[in-house]
Image 1 (cartoon, rainbow, N blue to C red):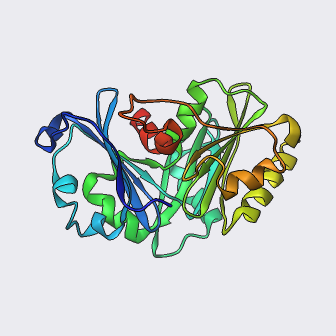
Image 2 (image 1 turned 180 degrees about the vertical axis):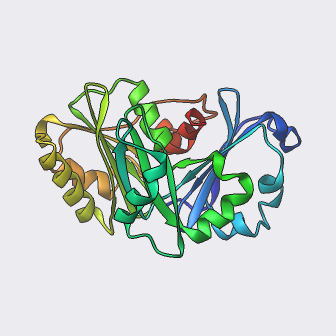
Length: 265
C-alpha cells in the first residue's frame, strides 16, 4: 500500500477557492483518502491519510475545516446486505439491520445503492462520529460510486470487477447491465484473493478461462496478487474507466473508486 502521498496535483489548485470545489472523502478502517474536484476535473488527490486526522485534524486541518461547494463521503462497512428497491421500506430498515448483528459501538446506514437495490450496512461508531460534522446526508456507501461508474460503461456478462483495498477485496458482477452480485471479503495474502475470486466465479457459474478480471484500487500491474490470479484467470486487465479528467500520469484504476464518489449525491 502506498504511503500518504499526493497522487495528483494540477496547476492552478488553490485551497482559498475551496467554496467552488467538491471534496471527496473515502474512509477506510485505518486510513482515508481525499480528492478535490472542480467541475469534471480531479485537481488533487491523496491516499492513506491517518484516520485520526478526521476526528482531530492537525496536518490536514485547513483541508478538513474549509467550506466546500459539496462534500461526499464514502463509508466502509463491517457488515452489509442488499435489499431490492421493490421490497425496501424505510420504516423496516431497523428490522433488516438485525441481520447484521449490530453492536452498540456501530452505526447503521440505509441508502440507495444502485438502480435496483438499497444497501443496509453498519460502520464503526468511531468513523461515523468523525464524519458527522460533514453531515450524514452527505454519506454514501464506499463502493456506491464504483458500482455506478461500472454500470455507466455497460459491463458485459463475461467481466468480473475487483476493487482492492489494504486488506479488503470488493467483487462486483453485472449481467444484462444489472448488478447481479456484490460482496466484500477480508484477505491476508494472494492465496485468499484467489480463493475468494474463484469462489465467486463458481457461485455465478462462470468459467475462469472465459472470464476477464478487471482490477482497480490498491494494486499494481504484475504485483503478487495479479500474478497469482493470472495462474487461474488468463484474462486480466486494469480498469480504464475515467469518471473525471485526471492530471499528469495518474492511472485511472488507481483512483477510480475515490473519483467515482463524484457520481454520488
